[in-house]
Length: 352
Image (cartoon, rainbow, N blue to C red; front, side, top):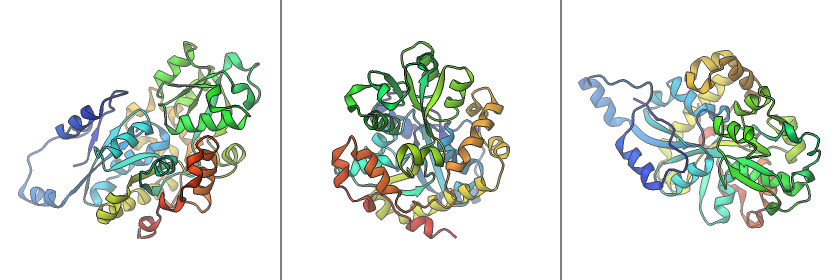
């Protein structure tokens, strides 16, 4: 039976994560029943894998939970524990510490880690645009007109070192400023970010759906840089930007190709299912708490984000090089790495 671990508190220590993993927390929809001998025999062949995701409730990471709801993990003989954290940076940390086998986050982490001598690779690329927006507080609408005006602002990000942090830094630098000319403030997403905007702790934020729509509906912020659509991403980032992905330690991928293949099978099936169903049908599959109390708003946000997802899980040609170029603008060491070491399409190519 698949198990989904509930969202861990922000800033949880590595020891705490490990303890929770070992304790085997059950999901919000799991029930216990006596095992038959047939079920016991089957469980012996079920392969377990833990994946930490930088916010399961975010639409950009929708395929991870949807694969569970569609029964695709189970169909592959996998017992997948999904662990939700506030940011992709936390997933990266847990992966490097060996506390989980996979991380659900943005592809840019793999390039950044390779520059630091850590070999991880994206084995499924689920989106080729960030699905993010750089939003600025409505109270600053008359002041912030160009990227140069981001200088001196406090910009909310999920966590320091996260992909939202990287995207904020790039836009500040693109405006002719230095990375040090703004203050990134970790505020997570959802209600914590909204509260930070309401209380004027932040002047802007890089965030995704459904948080972005909630900010717009409350008239707290406006979209300043669109990195949510293919057109907006091309304009703001100069091309595609591989985002949502499943990335794993290269050593693990080489040692467990069977598990990686089964995960690729599940995610490609999920992406194809998403491409043939309506936003309403997709929303009906997701946990109600993901709606943040407003299912119609969730569906509205989902409609805007569905085009960001790939249909085959493949890394698009030329996209890794564009991500490398963007990161190199404020992370010079990334310029010297070989992007081909940070992703593979071989598993998605093998999906039948």
